[in-house]
Length: 213
Image 1 (spheres, helix red, strand yellow):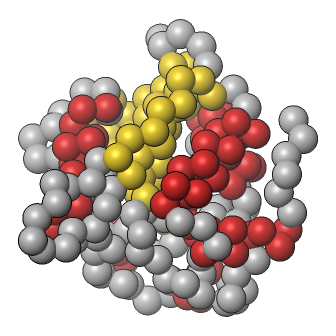
Image 2 (cartoon, one colour; image 1 turned 180 degrees about the horizontal axis):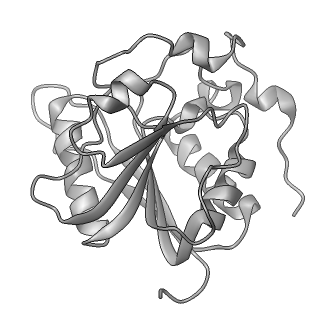
């Protein structure tokens, strides 16, 4: 399927290899506590209980909801020390999806894949979304969570040029042009507004075409 993207859309201010940027552990959370709670509640509502789940672009925290049953949670990221410190991961693999969007897993492996506040760093999104589709079981869920924080030097140009509404449309286009995804859904999961600022939480999710097994 023909798509409108050009290489310059995915250019970054810092084009150094990503493994260099992430060579030392960055054990910080990228959204505030209220937003983390919203992500956990989202996972509790949309992920299958007792499922096999991939935490894509994983780090030292997966924001897994307390007490939520899983069969297996696998992390894929760039820093082994971070993922080794993640209390919810059952296994992890170091892999650079920007260098090679082909994921090191067999077809139809996962019940769900989550990508949390890192989509802005993906330089080959259509290739990556197609491969996520490959490793999902039929009917499996791919949930992309984003907020408004980023490392600007590593975020792609098209992301930096857009507001939150544009980011929704952009991720929807990734699902559309990757193909074989159905039931695309957009959600605003932002914490309730209070006198204190909280980070927004937005979700775009879709399922691999085919009946769940």
